[in-house]
Image (cartoon, rainbow, N blue to C red):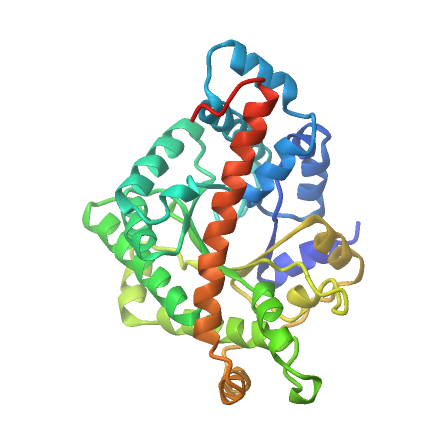
Length: 364
């Protein structure tokens, strides 16, 4: 039987994860079908769970049962999402074993309202790690200043971390450094480094969505900012993880923190639906795709190296944007702020939907 394009991409060195999770995907068998197609992991976030729970009836019976048992709104949210993650983790467990723990992960976001409190993020992360009780769980922590401390702390105790909402090269570098500090502390505590895995989720398409309206057609830069910014981050990753500091940890069993390309669905209908997949193929990375992007790539995608550590073209594009008055770092800072707000709003919307479904006021 011939391999799917998703399997060929994995053989090449880039893993495809699904950027979606729901009770329907689990119970319909669709998630197992995607695993058979070559999908190697799943990411979730408050927006994904808000859509799954508030816009369907798939969770209504369970919400009613939990409400009847005396659970408040947050506790019901917790039970629903943890159950989805546990079941998905069990489906991906064979992938986790087959890939020697490289893939097979299911990501669960720590409460986004804690993004600016390291101590609360760590406490919540530990609670979720214990409650989910799956080795192929990844705790999602936003790459804020507080988040960097939390990422380090969680990794130092051997937990897997998906550092999310990364936009800028500087933000990425701080994430990678937090990972290395955490793994170094794990080694100092005589912990086993080999099971500890992490990805750095770099958001892509939102860059073009923000920059394109500021450009005229004559610039020749429309649709170029996102790929250029990602290329800079990819190059920085290669630099950091080939350093003597990390290589010494790798000798002790440490894994490279792989860059993960997130927000890869094309928002602009004028662009190819697989633009942010085709432009970002590189070994040692992950691309997490929404359903429609995955479907499009499975039909028309090609596997060939595109993204390299040569960032000269990317640097030129970013410099040209600056000449036009567009500072990519300012754009990234705003996108981070907006992204945090979006996840908080989705979290609030999700809790309100659960409260409505359980037939009472919000009790969280």
